[in-house]
Image (cartoon, rainbow, N blue to C red):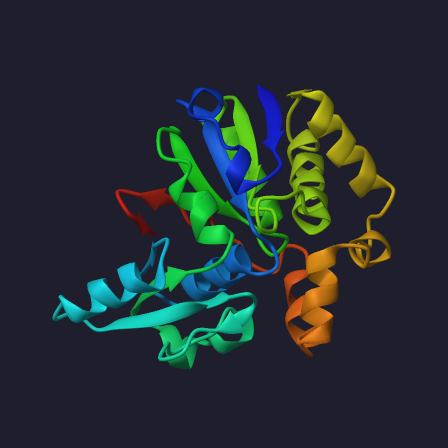
Length: 234
């Protein structure tokens, strides 16, 4: 098994992910939202690229959809939820389908079509992701959503932790960037020591979303692996 990393949604190349396992990470906060919502009984999540796409799905369907997401880390006008995982409680989301659009995360998910499996990862479910990767026993590309097309420390640290979880279960050959991610995680295992330097961390703190940050940095509190198939995360 080989493990590689793509550092942002804008750097996804079809030939690099084709027929491989992909793990999409946007830990602050889209994939943490998805993992939380699914764990709390959400029927499915439909990721879309634009606010207009999301509104169109809701307008043309008789099914009850909930709209969630953000632009520039802020709630979209007219949507039910923001991009805070703390809003996606069992009471609010159980039995409902979520249509979601975010600045970075949903772009990364949609960009990974052509992979054999598209798994949704975060700190919250890292060990579960690692177990699934080992069971599939194929080459892996961890796709960091990044921030506005650029490298993001938070996603890179999360990648390092997932790699660490895999290596505790199985041997794997790491690319240079995967080695670097794992090394940085091993030297910052409480993650707060390094994640505080991330620009997106600073944005979230400026917006008063420290509770979201604390939640998203928790390790392995959820034991499910959402997977994107045929337009929906189940």
